[in-house]
Length: 447
Image (cartoon, rainbow, N blue to C red):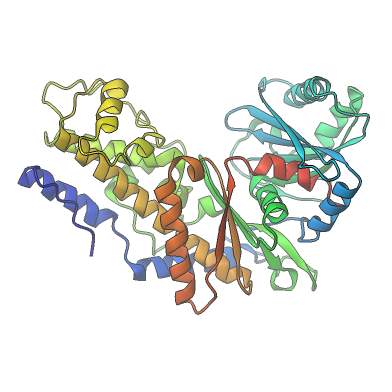
């Protein structure tokens, strides 16, 4: 049964709509168990040689990467990591330097890329970074991340395995293309690893939290990776050892019969740029949570059950104007919800009554809890697939820092679901906002 969200001073109509929404967004333990089992089947199907749906991509990265990193630490080595964000045209570069007996020295810098001659531009930015931080003499190993699924064609190379147009990166061997311009510019760099961001997150997590078997990214999007027994992967010929797997979790749900999207989810999907795809991501990721809340608020406004009738609705009427980061402010526990009122006034030019503020806070809480529980179910399914004796799950991404109730609900619910499967409860660790660029630098040490 859904929680009762009734507000003492609200009208009967306000409470009725509030609780109708709560009932629509509520997910039962039985439904969560179904989602966990469905995710397990989704990942299993994605590892088949012939699959009709989204594939789970296998990486050359193995748990033995920790030995390569330990060797680099002993040799006081330096490496570079790079994250290419194809959607935002953004490039993040970091360096990691190991010094005996000291914490590693990490430098980071963000650049924005030109749309033309993008690999030339990447090499130019890389040169600027090396010179500004006085790195060298080289050759410096470079691990490359990209925000797309990667078909790793070798330990050094990989191409984007995505039908979605990603400009100059589509069907290109990234290591080969980037290596060519690095040679042209005489940079002291050698590309040694190309992976998806979630694989590098797994590397960073394993380095920081030993025995990590599952990594989860809660960011603008969502994804998860884990270590799988190679003998259990039909698309591989290997029979021993474990390898890292990118589950492409964002795309789960496109053909699912157990996810139950609401009318607000269908509206968001219909108005999105990728209608009909990334179903799960649209229910749980930072990019979409604020928009779900905005749609709920505008339904209250259409029913004239929130805000003064003469309130300026122009800003709130704009798609994606209610940022997911605002939902942190909505956790305000003060009697007058002053921070909620301040945000609505400053961000939307709306002077909200106390009841209005309570309604907005309640809507944010409903959306957060549903998302967290669904993510927990997905984690439980992946933990089951990982077959670890006692799984260690590390979480990275900006939601870990800006929405603590989300993270707490995710970890608590996942532990309960995994115990219900008859498996040991997983241990959770928080890696922080950006695990993957540092992870790329660590993956660069892979031999």
